Amino acid sequence: MKQVERSVSRLLLALALLTAGAGAFAQATQTSFENGVLVEVSLQDPSVTLPQGRLVWDMSLETHAGDLRPLRLAERARLHAPDGTALPARFEEVVISESAHHPAGQLVLLVDGAELSTLLGQAGAAGPIELRLTFQGLGGEGERGFAWELPASVLAAAEAAPGTALRAYVSNAADGTISVIDLSTFEEVARWRVGDEASHGLALQPDGLTLYVGTGAEGAILALDTHDGSVTRRIEGDNNAHGIDNTADGRYVFVGAGGTGDTAHLTRIDTRSGAVDELSEGLSPVGHIDVSPDGRRLYVANLGTDTLTVLDTESLEVLAVVPVGDAPNESRASLDGRYVFVANWGSSDLTILDAGTLRALRTLKVGEGTHGVAVTPDGREVWVANRLSNDVAIIDAATFETLGRLEAGEYANHLTFTPDGALALVSNARAKELMVFDAATRALLATIPVGAEPHEIAVGAPPTQADR
Image 1 (tube, rainbow, N blue to C red):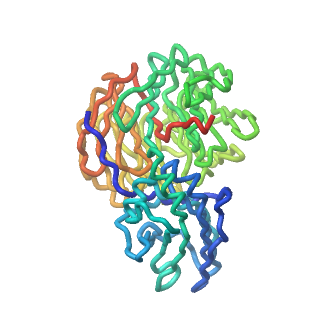
Image 2 (cartoon, helix red, strand yellow; image 1 turned 30 degrees about the vertical axis):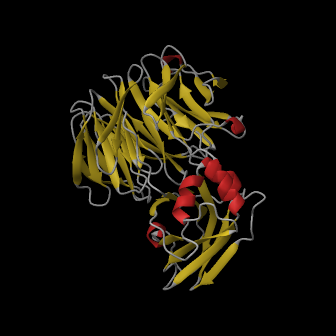
Image 3 (cartoon, rainbow, N blue to C red; image 1 turned 90 degrees about the vertical axis):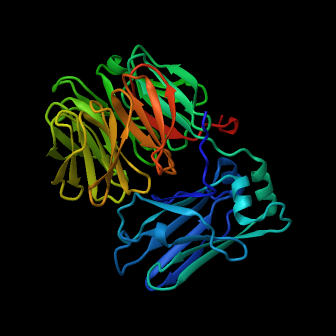
Protein backbone atom coordinates (compact mmCIF):
# COMPACT_ATOMS: atom_id res chain seq x y z
CA MET A 1 0.00 0.00 0.00
CA LYS A 2 1.26 3.41 -0.91
CA GLN A 3 3.04 5.27 1.87
CA VAL A 4 2.81 8.98 2.63
CA GLU A 5 6.05 10.88 2.24
CA ARG A 6 6.37 13.05 5.30
CA SER A 7 7.86 16.46 4.69
CA VAL A 8 11.14 17.19 6.47
CA SER A 9 9.46 19.68 8.73
CA ARG A 10 5.93 20.87 9.22
CA LEU A 11 4.95 23.74 11.42
CA LEU A 12 1.60 24.18 13.10
CA LEU A 13 1.29 27.65 14.60
CA ALA A 14 -1.51 28.10 17.13
CA LEU A 15 -2.38 31.09 19.29
CA ALA A 16 -4.12 29.78 22.40
CA LEU A 17 -4.05 30.33 26.14
CA LEU A 18 -0.47 30.13 27.36
CA THR A 19 0.26 26.81 28.98
CA ALA A 20 2.94 25.95 31.46
CA GLY A 21 5.25 23.00 31.26
CA ALA A 22 8.72 23.60 29.93
CA GLY A 23 10.03 20.94 32.31
CA ALA A 24 13.51 20.62 33.77
CA PHE A 25 15.14 21.95 30.57
CA ALA A 26 13.30 25.28 30.93
CA GLN A 27 15.58 28.20 30.14
CA ALA A 28 14.79 31.77 31.04
CA THR A 29 12.01 33.27 28.97
CA GLN A 30 13.50 35.36 26.18
CA THR A 31 11.95 38.73 25.48
CA SER A 32 12.07 41.34 22.77
CA PHE A 33 10.44 44.75 23.08
CA GLU A 34 10.51 46.93 20.00
CA ASN A 35 8.10 49.40 18.40
CA GLY A 36 5.58 48.93 21.19
CA VAL A 37 5.28 45.14 20.80
CA LEU A 38 6.58 42.81 23.51
CA VAL A 39 7.33 39.22 22.45
CA GLU A 40 8.13 36.53 25.05
CA VAL A 41 9.30 33.07 23.98
CA SER A 42 10.49 29.97 25.87
CA LEU A 43 11.36 26.48 24.62
CA GLN A 44 9.77 23.49 26.30
CA ASP A 45 11.99 20.58 27.30
CA PRO A 46 13.04 18.93 23.99
CA SER A 47 13.89 15.66 25.77
CA VAL A 48 10.15 15.41 26.47
CA THR A 49 8.70 16.82 23.27
CA LEU A 50 11.06 15.47 20.60
CA PRO A 51 10.20 11.80 21.28
CA GLN A 52 6.60 12.90 20.76
CA GLY A 53 7.60 14.22 17.35
CA ARG A 54 7.65 17.95 18.05
CA LEU A 55 9.42 20.99 19.42
CA VAL A 56 7.26 23.41 21.39
CA TRP A 57 7.78 27.09 22.17
CA ASP A 58 5.50 28.91 24.61
CA MET A 59 4.77 32.40 23.31
CA SER A 60 3.00 35.53 24.36
CA LEU A 61 2.69 38.92 22.66
CA GLU A 62 1.58 42.22 24.12
CA THR A 63 0.92 45.71 22.84
CA HIS A 64 -1.26 48.68 23.72
CA ALA A 65 -0.61 50.47 20.46
CA GLY A 66 -2.63 48.39 18.02
CA ASP A 67 -4.40 45.19 17.07
CA LEU A 68 -2.15 42.11 16.87
CA ARG A 69 -4.82 39.87 15.33
CA PRO A 70 -3.97 40.68 11.69
CA LEU A 71 -0.35 39.54 12.11
CA ARG A 72 0.43 36.73 9.71
CA LEU A 73 2.98 34.98 11.90
CA ALA A 74 3.38 32.02 9.57
CA GLU A 75 4.76 34.35 6.93
CA ARG A 76 7.14 36.03 9.39
CA ALA A 77 8.65 33.02 11.18
CA ARG A 78 11.96 31.42 10.19
CA LEU A 79 13.86 28.47 11.65
CA HIS A 80 17.65 28.57 11.24
CA ALA A 81 20.43 26.00 11.21
CA PRO A 82 23.47 26.54 13.47
CA ASP A 83 25.28 28.34 10.61
CA GLY A 84 22.41 30.82 10.35
CA THR A 85 20.90 29.38 7.18
CA ALA A 86 17.13 29.67 7.00
CA LEU A 87 15.73 26.15 6.77
CA PRO A 88 13.18 25.07 4.15
CA ALA A 89 10.40 24.61 6.69
CA ARG A 90 6.79 25.21 5.70
CA PHE A 91 4.97 27.35 8.20
CA GLU A 92 1.25 27.19 8.79
CA GLU A 93 -0.83 29.42 11.00
CA VAL A 94 -3.94 28.56 12.99
CA VAL A 95 -5.20 31.56 14.96
CA ILE A 96 -7.46 30.57 17.86
CA SER A 97 -7.27 33.67 20.04
CA GLU A 98 -9.30 36.81 19.55
CA SER A 99 -7.28 38.97 21.93
CA ALA A 100 -6.26 42.13 20.09
CA HIS A 101 -3.52 43.17 22.52
CA HIS A 102 -2.48 40.08 24.51
CA PRO A 103 -2.43 36.92 22.35
CA ALA A 104 -0.56 33.97 23.80
CA GLY A 105 -0.02 30.37 22.83
CA GLN A 106 2.42 27.81 21.49
CA LEU A 107 4.63 27.49 18.45
CA VAL A 108 4.96 23.82 17.52
CA LEU A 109 7.40 22.24 15.09
CA LEU A 110 6.15 18.77 14.18
CA VAL A 111 9.38 16.91 13.60
CA ASP A 112 10.94 13.80 15.13
CA GLY A 113 14.55 13.50 16.24
CA ALA A 114 15.85 11.92 13.04
CA GLU A 115 14.20 14.56 10.88
CA LEU A 116 15.50 17.40 13.03
CA SER A 117 19.03 15.98 12.94
CA THR A 118 18.90 15.85 9.15
CA LEU A 119 17.33 19.28 8.95
CA LEU A 120 20.03 20.87 11.10
CA GLY A 121 22.86 18.91 9.49
CA GLN A 122 24.02 17.94 12.97
CA ALA A 123 23.91 14.13 12.98
CA GLY A 124 26.51 12.87 15.44
CA ALA A 125 27.28 16.32 16.84
CA ALA A 126 29.26 16.26 20.09
CA GLY A 127 28.58 19.69 21.55
CA PRO A 128 25.47 21.85 22.08
CA ILE A 129 23.57 22.84 18.97
CA GLU A 130 22.15 26.31 18.51
CA LEU A 131 18.52 26.42 17.47
CA ARG A 132 17.47 29.86 16.24
CA LEU A 133 13.96 31.18 15.62
CA THR A 134 13.34 34.57 14.04
CA PHE A 135 10.36 36.70 13.08
CA GLN A 136 10.50 39.19 10.26
CA GLY A 137 8.86 42.60 10.64
CA LEU A 138 6.98 41.76 13.82
CA GLY A 139 5.83 45.19 14.97
CA GLY A 140 7.84 47.35 12.56
CA GLU A 141 10.78 46.60 10.31
CA GLY A 142 13.72 44.37 11.10
CA GLU A 143 14.15 40.91 12.54
CA ARG A 144 13.67 39.54 16.04
CA GLY A 145 15.81 36.56 16.92
CA PHE A 146 15.66 33.99 19.72
CA ALA A 147 18.23 31.23 20.25
CA TRP A 148 18.52 28.12 22.41
CA GLU A 149 21.26 25.59 23.00
CA LEU A 150 19.99 22.13 22.24
CA PRO A 151 22.13 19.49 24.02
CA ALA A 152 23.61 17.01 21.56
CA SER A 153 22.63 14.17 23.92
CA VAL A 154 18.98 15.19 23.69
CA LEU A 155 19.09 15.22 19.91
CA ALA A 156 20.86 11.85 19.81
CA ALA A 157 18.31 10.25 22.12
CA ALA A 158 15.42 11.72 20.18
CA GLU A 159 17.03 10.64 16.92
CA ALA A 160 16.88 7.04 18.10
CA ALA A 161 13.23 7.36 19.13
CA PRO A 162 10.58 6.43 16.59
CA GLY A 163 8.62 9.20 14.98
CA THR A 164 5.04 9.80 15.99
CA ALA A 165 2.61 8.16 13.59
CA LEU A 166 -0.96 9.39 13.43
CA ARG A 167 -4.20 7.56 14.02
CA ALA A 168 -7.62 8.25 12.59
CA TYR A 169 -10.73 7.27 14.55
CA VAL A 170 -13.91 6.75 12.53
CA SER A 171 -17.40 6.48 14.00
CA ASN A 172 -19.34 3.67 12.31
CA ALA A 173 -22.89 4.62 13.21
CA ALA A 174 -24.84 1.62 11.91
CA ASP A 175 -22.83 -1.16 13.57
CA GLY A 176 -21.88 0.68 16.78
CA THR A 177 -18.12 0.58 16.33
CA ILE A 178 -15.10 2.85 16.10
CA SER A 179 -12.49 2.04 13.44
CA VAL A 180 -8.89 2.82 14.39
CA ILE A 181 -6.69 3.56 11.36
CA ASP A 182 -2.89 3.72 11.29
CA LEU A 183 -2.15 6.58 8.89
CA SER A 184 1.42 5.42 8.27
CA THR A 185 0.23 2.13 6.78
CA PHE A 186 -3.38 3.04 5.88
CA GLU A 187 -4.65 -0.04 7.69
CA GLU A 188 -7.37 -0.57 10.26
CA VAL A 189 -5.54 -1.74 13.39
CA ALA A 190 -8.53 -2.06 15.72
CA ARG A 191 -12.32 -1.85 15.81
CA TRP A 192 -13.93 -1.01 19.14
CA ARG A 193 -17.59 -1.75 19.87
CA VAL A 194 -19.49 0.92 21.80
CA GLY A 195 -23.08 -0.32 21.42
CA ASP A 196 -25.72 -1.33 18.91
CA GLU A 197 -25.24 2.08 17.30
CA ALA A 198 -22.60 4.82 17.49
CA SER A 199 -23.01 8.58 17.46
CA HIS A 200 -22.41 10.32 14.16
CA GLY A 201 -19.84 12.56 15.85
CA LEU A 202 -16.84 11.94 18.07
CA ALA A 203 -14.22 14.09 19.79
CA LEU A 204 -10.58 13.31 20.57
CA GLN A 205 -9.04 15.16 23.53
CA PRO A 206 -5.92 17.26 22.72
CA ASP A 207 -3.58 14.85 24.54
CA GLY A 208 -4.85 11.98 22.38
CA LEU A 209 -5.60 9.80 25.40
CA THR A 210 -9.40 10.00 25.53
CA LEU A 211 -11.99 9.70 22.78
CA TYR A 212 -15.58 10.77 23.44
CA VAL A 213 -18.29 8.89 21.53
CA GLY A 214 -22.01 8.26 21.87
CA THR A 215 -24.14 5.12 21.65
CA GLY A 216 -26.69 6.49 19.19
CA ALA A 217 -30.36 6.03 20.08
CA GLU A 218 -29.41 4.58 23.47
CA GLY A 219 -28.18 8.06 24.35
CA ALA A 220 -25.13 7.24 26.49
CA ILE A 221 -21.89 9.18 26.19
CA LEU A 222 -18.66 7.20 26.59
CA ALA A 223 -15.10 8.28 27.32
CA LEU A 224 -12.77 5.70 25.74
CA ASP A 225 -9.14 5.06 26.65
CA THR A 226 -7.34 5.25 23.30
CA HIS A 227 -4.84 2.57 24.36
CA ASP A 228 -7.43 -0.15 23.98
CA GLY A 229 -10.90 1.37 23.60
CA SER A 230 -11.93 0.55 27.17
CA VAL A 231 -14.63 2.73 28.74
CA THR A 232 -13.29 5.04 31.46
CA ARG A 233 -16.55 6.93 32.01
CA ARG A 234 -20.17 6.47 30.97
CA ILE A 235 -22.81 9.21 31.14
CA GLU A 236 -26.35 7.97 30.72
CA GLY A 237 -28.85 9.80 28.53
CA ASP A 238 -32.29 9.21 27.07
CA ASN A 239 -31.89 10.96 23.71
CA ASN A 240 -30.10 10.07 20.51
CA ALA A 241 -26.45 11.13 20.94
CA HIS A 242 -25.54 12.63 17.57
CA GLY A 243 -22.99 15.45 17.12
CA ILE A 244 -19.93 15.73 19.40
CA ASP A 245 -17.17 18.35 19.60
CA ASN A 246 -14.74 19.72 22.19
CA THR A 247 -12.95 22.97 22.89
CA ALA A 248 -9.35 23.26 21.70
CA ASP A 249 -8.03 23.04 25.26
CA GLY A 250 -10.15 19.94 25.99
CA ARG A 251 -11.97 21.63 28.88
CA TYR A 252 -15.47 21.04 27.55
CA VAL A 253 -17.00 18.26 25.48
CA PHE A 254 -20.40 19.01 23.90
CA VAL A 255 -22.89 16.39 22.73
CA GLY A 256 -25.95 17.28 20.66
CA ALA A 257 -28.92 14.93 20.72
CA GLY A 258 -31.36 14.58 17.86
CA GLY A 259 -35.04 13.85 18.11
CA THR A 260 -38.14 16.01 18.00
CA GLY A 261 -38.28 19.67 18.93
CA ASP A 262 -39.22 19.03 22.55
CA THR A 263 -36.63 16.33 23.19
CA ALA A 264 -33.58 17.68 21.37
CA HIS A 265 -30.96 18.90 23.78
CA LEU A 266 -27.31 19.68 24.32
CA THR A 267 -25.03 18.14 26.94
CA ARG A 268 -21.84 19.82 28.16
CA ILE A 269 -19.23 17.77 30.02
CA ASP A 270 -16.59 19.60 32.06
CA THR A 271 -13.60 17.27 31.75
CA ARG A 272 -11.86 18.89 34.74
CA SER A 273 -14.64 18.87 37.31
CA GLY A 274 -16.76 16.09 35.83
CA ALA A 275 -19.86 18.32 35.90
CA VAL A 276 -22.58 17.67 33.34
CA ASP A 277 -24.94 20.44 32.18
CA GLU A 278 -27.86 20.20 29.79
CA LEU A 279 -29.75 22.68 27.63
CA SER A 280 -32.85 22.07 25.52
CA GLU A 281 -34.34 25.47 24.71
CA GLY A 282 -34.21 26.51 21.05
CA LEU A 283 -32.80 23.25 19.67
CA SER A 284 -34.73 21.23 17.11
CA PRO A 285 -33.45 18.51 16.26
CA VAL A 286 -29.69 18.81 16.61
CA GLY A 287 -27.40 17.81 13.75
CA HIS A 288 -23.67 18.36 14.22
CA ILE A 289 -21.98 20.92 16.44
CA ASP A 290 -18.77 22.95 16.16
CA VAL A 291 -16.73 24.99 18.63
CA SER A 292 -15.14 28.23 17.40
CA PRO A 293 -11.32 28.27 17.26
CA ASP A 294 -11.11 30.53 20.32
CA GLY A 295 -13.35 28.17 22.30
CA ARG A 296 -15.91 30.84 23.15
CA ARG A 297 -18.78 29.96 20.84
CA LEU A 298 -20.66 26.79 20.06
CA TYR A 299 -22.47 26.43 16.74
CA VAL A 300 -25.39 23.98 16.72
CA ALA A 301 -26.99 22.97 13.41
CA ASN A 302 -30.78 22.61 13.76
CA LEU A 303 -31.96 20.31 11.02
CA GLY A 304 -35.64 20.80 11.74
CA THR A 305 -35.82 24.60 11.84
CA ASP A 306 -33.21 25.49 9.18
CA THR A 307 -31.23 27.52 11.70
CA LEU A 308 -27.87 27.65 13.43
CA THR A 309 -27.97 28.25 17.19
CA VAL A 310 -24.97 30.15 18.56
CA LEU A 311 -24.19 29.69 22.27
CA ASP A 312 -21.60 30.93 24.75
CA THR A 313 -19.55 27.86 25.75
CA GLU A 314 -19.12 29.06 29.36
CA SER A 315 -22.58 30.36 30.26
CA LEU A 316 -24.52 28.26 27.70
CA GLU A 317 -26.44 31.45 26.92
CA VAL A 318 -28.05 31.44 23.48
CA LEU A 319 -26.43 34.37 21.66
CA ALA A 320 -28.34 34.06 18.39
CA VAL A 321 -30.49 31.79 16.26
CA VAL A 322 -29.48 32.37 12.64
CA PRO A 323 -31.50 31.35 9.54
CA VAL A 324 -29.37 29.36 7.09
CA GLY A 325 -30.24 26.86 4.33
CA ASP A 326 -32.61 23.91 4.32
CA ALA A 327 -31.70 21.20 6.86
CA PRO A 328 -28.26 22.41 8.00
CA ASN A 329 -26.16 19.45 9.06
CA GLU A 330 -22.70 20.72 10.00
CA SER A 331 -20.75 23.96 10.36
CA ARG A 332 -17.11 24.99 10.63
CA ALA A 333 -15.67 28.33 11.67
CA SER A 334 -12.78 29.76 9.67
CA LEU A 335 -9.49 29.74 11.54
CA ASP A 336 -9.08 33.51 11.35
CA GLY A 337 -12.43 33.95 13.09
CA ARG A 338 -14.06 35.79 10.18
CA TYR A 339 -16.54 33.30 8.77
CA VAL A 340 -18.76 30.36 9.62
CA PHE A 341 -19.42 27.84 6.85
CA VAL A 342 -22.68 25.88 7.10
CA ALA A 343 -23.37 22.74 5.04
CA ASN A 344 -27.08 22.52 4.22
CA TRP A 345 -28.18 18.97 3.43
CA GLY A 346 -31.70 19.80 2.27
CA SER A 347 -30.87 22.67 -0.09
CA SER A 348 -27.53 21.22 -1.25
CA ASP A 349 -25.57 24.40 -0.63
CA LEU A 350 -23.10 26.15 1.66
CA THR A 351 -24.12 29.21 3.67
CA ILE A 352 -21.27 31.59 4.52
CA LEU A 353 -21.90 33.71 7.61
CA ASP A 354 -19.99 36.74 8.87
CA ALA A 355 -18.84 35.45 12.28
CA GLY A 356 -19.10 38.90 13.80
CA THR A 357 -22.55 39.97 12.64
CA LEU A 358 -23.86 36.42 11.99
CA ARG A 359 -25.38 37.65 8.75
CA ALA A 360 -25.34 35.51 5.62
CA LEU A 361 -22.79 36.81 3.11
CA ARG A 362 -23.28 34.26 0.38
CA THR A 363 -24.87 30.94 -0.47
CA LEU A 364 -22.88 28.62 -2.72
CA LYS A 365 -24.13 25.67 -4.72
CA VAL A 366 -21.33 23.15 -4.19
CA GLY A 367 -22.88 19.78 -5.09
CA GLU A 368 -25.87 17.58 -4.35
CA GLY A 369 -26.65 16.49 -0.81
CA THR A 370 -24.15 18.83 0.90
CA HIS A 371 -23.42 17.21 4.24
CA GLY A 372 -19.91 17.62 5.71
CA VAL A 373 -17.56 20.61 5.84
CA ALA A 374 -13.97 21.16 7.05
CA VAL A 375 -11.35 23.93 6.87
CA THR A 376 -7.72 23.15 6.02
CA PRO A 377 -5.24 23.71 8.89
CA ASP A 378 -3.69 26.66 7.05
CA GLY A 379 -7.14 28.26 6.79
CA ARG A 380 -6.95 28.72 3.03
CA GLU A 381 -9.48 26.18 1.80
CA VAL A 382 -12.91 24.83 2.71
CA TRP A 383 -13.67 21.25 1.69
CA VAL A 384 -17.28 20.12 1.41
CA ALA A 385 -18.57 16.53 1.14
CA ASN A 386 -21.66 15.96 -1.00
CA ARG A 387 -23.61 12.78 -0.34
CA LEU A 388 -25.75 12.63 -3.47
CA SER A 389 -23.19 13.74 -6.05
CA ASN A 390 -20.56 11.57 -4.29
CA ASP A 391 -17.85 14.19 -4.46
CA VAL A 392 -15.88 16.79 -2.53
CA ALA A 393 -15.90 20.47 -3.50
CA ILE A 394 -12.84 22.58 -2.66
CA ILE A 395 -13.55 26.26 -1.99
CA ASP A 396 -11.14 29.18 -1.59
CA ALA A 397 -11.74 30.44 1.96
CA ALA A 398 -10.97 34.06 1.01
CA THR A 399 -12.67 34.48 -2.39
CA PHE A 400 -15.29 31.69 -2.04
CA GLU A 401 -14.42 30.48 -5.55
CA THR A 402 -14.54 26.77 -6.35
CA LEU A 403 -10.96 25.55 -6.80
CA GLY A 404 -11.67 21.96 -7.71
CA ARG A 405 -13.73 18.86 -7.18
CA LEU A 406 -12.72 15.34 -6.17
CA GLU A 407 -14.60 12.16 -6.93
CA ALA A 408 -15.44 10.39 -3.68
CA GLY A 409 -17.23 7.15 -2.84
CA GLU A 410 -20.90 6.35 -2.36
CA TYR A 411 -22.57 8.80 0.03
CA ALA A 412 -19.56 11.04 0.75
CA ASN A 413 -20.28 11.92 4.34
CA HIS A 414 -17.72 13.74 6.52
CA LEU A 415 -14.13 14.88 6.15
CA THR A 416 -11.17 16.14 8.16
CA PHE A 417 -7.43 16.80 7.84
CA THR A 418 -4.29 15.69 9.60
CA PRO A 419 -2.90 18.51 11.80
CA ASP A 420 -0.15 19.34 9.29
CA GLY A 421 -2.68 19.57 6.46
CA ALA A 422 -0.91 16.90 4.40
CA LEU A 423 -3.79 14.40 4.28
CA ALA A 424 -7.52 14.81 3.75
CA LEU A 425 -9.77 12.01 5.02
CA VAL A 426 -13.28 11.40 3.65
CA SER A 427 -15.82 8.88 4.98
CA ASN A 428 -18.18 7.27 2.46
CA ALA A 429 -21.24 6.07 4.36
CA ARG A 430 -22.77 3.55 1.97
CA ALA A 431 -19.43 2.29 0.68
CA LYS A 432 -18.22 1.52 4.24
CA GLU A 433 -14.85 3.05 3.56
CA LEU A 434 -12.44 5.87 4.38
CA MET A 435 -10.65 7.60 1.51
CA VAL A 436 -7.27 9.30 2.05
CA PHE A 437 -6.17 12.09 -0.29
CA ASP A 438 -2.96 14.05 -0.59
CA ALA A 439 -4.39 17.46 0.24
CA ALA A 440 -1.87 19.35 -1.91
CA THR A 441 -1.87 17.23 -5.09
CA ARG A 442 -5.47 15.95 -4.62
CA ALA A 443 -4.23 12.43 -5.41
CA LEU A 444 -6.09 9.48 -3.87
CA LEU A 445 -3.60 7.62 -1.66
CA ALA A 446 -5.74 4.87 -0.15
CA THR A 447 -9.26 3.52 0.26
CA ILE A 448 -9.66 1.73 3.59
CA PRO A 449 -12.58 -0.56 4.51
CA VAL A 450 -14.21 0.40 7.82
CA GLY A 451 -17.51 -0.37 9.58
CA ALA A 452 -21.09 0.26 8.51
CA GLU A 453 -22.10 3.86 7.80
CA PRO A 454 -18.92 5.74 8.75
CA HIS A 455 -19.45 9.34 9.83
CA GLU A 456 -17.10 11.77 11.61
CA ILE A 457 -13.33 11.29 11.79
CA ALA A 458 -10.87 12.40 14.49
CA VAL A 459 -7.09 12.43 14.03
CA GLY A 460 -4.30 12.45 16.62
CA ALA A 461 -1.09 10.84 17.81
CA PRO A 462 -1.50 7.34 19.28
CA PRO A 463 -0.89 6.91 23.02
CA THR A 464 2.43 5.48 24.14
CA GLN A 465 3.25 3.15 27.01
CA ALA A 466 4.57 6.18 28.90
CA ASP A 467 1.05 7.64 28.80
CA ARG A 468 -0.36 4.81 30.89
